[in-house]
Each structure stands twice: as structure tokens, then as C-alpha cells.
Length: 631
Picture (cartoon, rainbow, N blue to C red):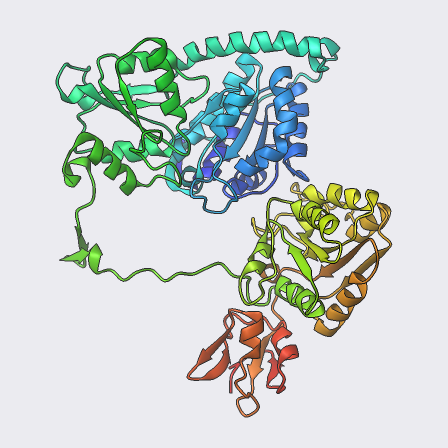
């Protein structure tokens, strides 16, 4: 064993590698992305890793490997599980031979997601076991244990870390390479009575699943990561303090234990496997208690389970939490919010619950000073914006200019280009989920045929979930314009490759899937490709294409500025600038500012895309390769 300072996602990947994982598949999505990237970087010899085209495909690839006796890991975020739910629900009935772990990273807050959905419900819905780590160290160990449980019960299992576990850093005890498990798959064995999902087989397997989950509940009651923490590490007594208890899971358990460092007067039930719930252990915890506070993210899963158990066994215990509004029922928990919840529940002064004092004592250069949080200035609001020089800004502006004065709807999508909703662009009228803009545009066009309907989608998302929408539009003779923002990467999640890049996660070179050829192959006659940074050509292209009947497409192709070298910067000629502010008013580029009444270009941000210079009515902006960008 040795120590490494790791992000939680890195720890999960190394745990899977230590468990002998043979195949890792997934689709990028914050906060899960780094798991697969670390697996690719640190993989053992013979391990296969891929970014799949979407989560559904990733689930199916991992299932196939597990059918062949391999240990497989599939990664995604919580909304990605929606995409993968079709194979998941059937896979739950079929089962697996090799260990299969489905890592779904939930995003309380949400920090970077459309929803705050709780994967623990999916575990219950699909009747699959779920492991809920409370720290990066536990996630490292738990993923290895999850593979063992998966193989023991021949079922896929969920590993459900949340954002703070995924992205928190810690010093982790990890195995040396000579301690890794080496797993040798024994191959796929044909057996249509097992692997082919017929109604009769599903009925029989449903009975087995229900019986298995009863055994798992009992097994999980003895699982070392489900545990009752008694006050001062002593058995429960009959004092008044022992009549209250706290139940928690995931990162909330870590917050609870921090809060109780100085007020460890109540027993704490740690729930690491929310499904199947460790009922026998919960009964032991509830014995002799009058009140229990449940602290968890996101939904009242533990709370509902304890309520069920109290009803089933007629226990006179009051269960408090989200359902009783003693704990907030949306957003992520924090150390401070848990301190406050425990303080209210126990009726203790803030400091007794471990909460920080109003004044924090800090030391700097051996000098002690007091920093009063009440005197701290409010943090500035920094809304997310498209990067300086982002070609998506030029694409949006070209469409906006071309369609000025016409009745339009601009259906957006999930990705960097969602930021096109911000002023002054204001070019995202709808945004639902990946690829949905195509269907929404088709629906609007059926009801309002006089509206020019546009659907925006990125190149990665086109492959992931938009192709079917394009096929539907052609087949059903829709009237819409598809705008594909092709920046040759999956930008928002960290520049992962996709079928259009010609690179794989294993480092191989593959044939690029040509988006234009795909569109023409499914029946689009009007498909044009243009550089959005050539504004005049881009505007002309959009005007021409939008007037074509039926389904048509414009591919705006320009590489992401984060992975290409800037061409230079723009210099603003003070003697020509008329301070009309058109560049700022219409583009909103973060590289352009007003200082002392003058328009300035920040050379540390400007990439020399030249979009602003193409707008400037005074010709006051010129390209330079270096030096001061303003004179």
C-alpha cells in the first residue's frame, strides 16, 4: 500500500483497476468524467477503455463484456442514466456473469446539470443494489467491494458518488500494482435460456430478484460500511441523550461526523447501501430511540425506509427530515447546513454542535487576528459566458443577423452553446436535454408553420442523441433548419474525443465519421459547411439555407479556442474608435471592456478571432501578433 493525493473520481478509477476491471465504457458528463479518463491513463495491461457514443451504448458495451465473464465499469452522470435506462431495466432482469459496476455521479445543487434527480430511486426502481460512498477513500475501497457483490449475486450494481465525493481531494491509501487483482474472463457461453429475454424468463427472474434482495438486505446489515456509531464508542444507554439519533448516508454522513466531534452524544446510523436497505441493522439502531433526524442528498430515501420500518414493526419513533421540513428538500447539503440541522434537532448552542463561531481565529506569520464573517464583502456574481474567441459566439451572431426581423424560434441544447442564452446574444429559446432541440423545433413548426424553426446542436451531441431527431425530421417531412456547431471536440466536459474526431480513448486513430455525409445519407439535400468566423459568408449561408424547403442544415466548423493556438490579438486604434460600443453591445465577448470611456481589448483573453473587427463600423480594430492591444 502507498498514499496518493487524489480526486475522488481518480480514486474510484484506481479502485476499479485494483479490482481487475477488464473494460471501462462511458459518456462524459460532470461530475463523472474523470473516472474514465483516469482509467484510461492508469489502466492495467489488457484493460480496454472507450468513450461510447452515448450512455445507452456504453451500458450495452459493458453488459456484453460482463456476459463474457469480464469485470466491467460503465460511467455517466445522473441525467445520462435516463439515456441508459432502456438497457438497464432489462439488464436488471437478465443479470450478468462477470462483475458489472454502474457508476452514476449525482449532482446535488445542481452544480452543472439540468436536474437534481437521485439515482437511489433508480436503484429501487430497477431492483438493483446501490453503494453510496461517503468519502474518496471509501469510494476507492467500495468500488472493489461492489465488483465482489456483483459477481456473488450475478447482478449489475450501482455506485452512486455525489459531486463532493467525486471532486473532493484527499490523501488515499491505494494498493501497489503487485496487490492488484488480475481477473481473467472465461468467455461468453451460449445459453438462450439465460441471455435471451423472453416474457416467461422475465417472470421467473423477477421472482428470483425479489428473493435475492431479501438476502441482500440481510447481507448488507452485516456489511462493514453500514454501521451504528454509538456515543463515545460505547454501547447505547438509557439516558435522555440516547433517545435521539441521526441517520445519514453519502457525503452527508461525513458532515454529520464533523458536526458531532464535540457533541458526540447521539448514535448515528451510517447507510452505505440505500438499496436493498439494511433493515436488521436499522432495527437495532431504532431500538430505544424516540426521535431520528435523517440527513441525506437528495431525496428522503433513508427517511422513507425508516418510516417504512417503523410502520412495519410498530415502533413509536418519530422520523424527521425532508418530509417534515426539518431539512431542506432541494440543493446539496454543506458542512454548515448540517451543523445547523443538528443544532436545531439537538437543541444545542452552535458551538456545541461543532458549528464555526461567528468570528474565526486564524494565524498568519505567528500573529493572531480575528476575521468576522459578517464584515466580509459579498462575492461578485460571475455568470458563465462563452470563452473569448469561441466560434459558437460567431455562429449564434451569424444566425441572429441573418434572421433579423423574421419570426423565429431557436431551440438550444446541452453544452457550451447553452451559454448562447445570455445577453446580448439571447439565442437559446428552449433547452431540454441532449438532442431534444430537433424534436422541439419540429413540434413548433407543426403548430406555427409561419415560424422559422432552428435547432442548435454540437458535433459530439449530434452523434450522441441528435441523429434520430434528424432522421425523424426527414421521414416526417418537417420544415426546420439544423445548425451543427462543430468545434471538433466535446468541449464542455473537458475535450474528449468523439466519432467525428478520428481519435479513440485508447489512443488509436479511426476513420472520422463525416457529419455532412451522414446528413446527406439520411436524405438532407441542402447541407452547407461554413466557417462562422467569416461573418459575411456565414450570414449569407444562413439566409440562403433557411429559405430552402424541408429539412436543411448548416454546419459551422471552427475548432474550439481552448484546444487551438490563438492567432494573435486585436488592437484597438484609439484615433479611429468612435466609442459606439457596438462590439460590446452585440457580442458580449469577455475580452472587450470599457476603461475610462475607451473600448479596450484584454490581450490576456483576446484570441484574435476578428469577429469584433468585422462588426466595427469605424475600422478601429486591427490584428496584431503580440504587444499592447490598445493604443
